[in-house]
Image (tube, rainbow, N blue to C red; front, side, top):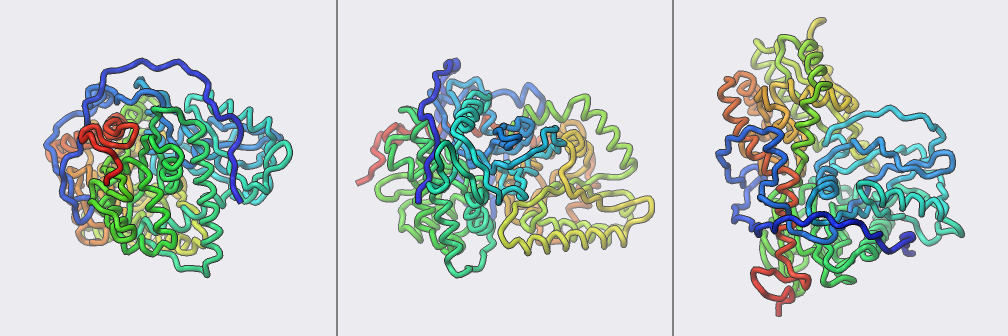
Length: 604
């Protein structure tokens, strides 16, 4: 059974953006591969103050030299509802932010010389008879989902059949393409669900099940037990069909000279599928998550297909250099490839591996955080916690967040330093974790977290003081930004993580206060933010001592560390991300070779 995507294959002619100066070629520096992502970074003594002028400049001096069209394939970004028998695109959900969405938005609104098109699944389309506006909950970058993708689905309607007429499809496609984001939607349905005059959407969540049930846990070092093979085969078949539908849509949208950027593990087969049909296309694949050691990858029953799928790209970008080494080792052991953590040669084709952390929109964060509305909320936060130091945490409610270890370290700190018991609070914000099939383990983790919070508050709290404030839902955006500004310390204890946008947001929002960022070495962000206080979340006593050091550090010490840290944060702007990625892609000839070497991509 195959999947077909809908309607028009052509793009309307839009005005060309202005042409900027050419970007100097970006070359990656040689680096040592660390034991963990935190220790392979060469620290730089950068003492720069982050302000609106600094963060808005392009640090490569020019815009990337990509011209023509950039096609970004991402699993899902639109939020679509079916109200009163009509399809509607819910534009109220555009405020959902993540590093992934910041990068897409940058390519969309940038004044660079390219046009940007987003190829994305419509997402689960839900029925809604309620035409009144829904209350908005403005989450932060990391509250989208553990993987950084927008997720907002109402599972109560996903088993219902939704019929979408051809006219409705065409109208929505026109609306999405004419929007600021310029989205070309992918309609996922089996041939049997294609009816006269439209399509039937059934069991819509199945298109994400293989990625979220099989790939996401394993990429975070959590191996699931096999269930007999039948379920795995069905999940794989849906995964393959979805990737085929994306490849069809990309190839229908593609014009010679376009650059294709494929995002994340949901679409691991797409690069090779596109390569077979467009041999001369320049393709990049970006992995937002960690990539595990080959011992875990070898446990995947479709390991060859997945690795071969990614190797269809010219460039594969990882959040940390260690992840690139793991990928290279997996390819060598499973596919018998040649090369190392910078370049892989397979079947005569070279694929460049690069460490390009996903950027964030620093200007947007700074502008939003230092607004009159947030200023007012800051005063409210200050009044609520008067006379107390604030430790801020923001994590998904799952075991990968290391939230239990954070609470254990905080409890150890209060036990070892009784003088702080009435003078400090941990404000822990949480967001819903990715819903996984058979998620009893994560449900147990949430219960464990609640027990730890209750025990700490019972032992060290009083009628007038609550040591841990646990928020089960993301706060309003202004409250979150105010907490980022007012907190004396941000504590990230993830045990596996691609990028921590909370860490980056905190550094930007501490422009005046100069708080301390304490960051897990198992976050991919730690490899780029060597000036943060890097900790091992498994070492509870050591984390407790770092909490004490952070709260007792002098203002001068905090200011010096923050000045160095903010220079590293600037390296993770969306401008830097785009400059590095397209700098590499522009060094690849349409035939797939590298300009600098002048050789063919096919090695004899």
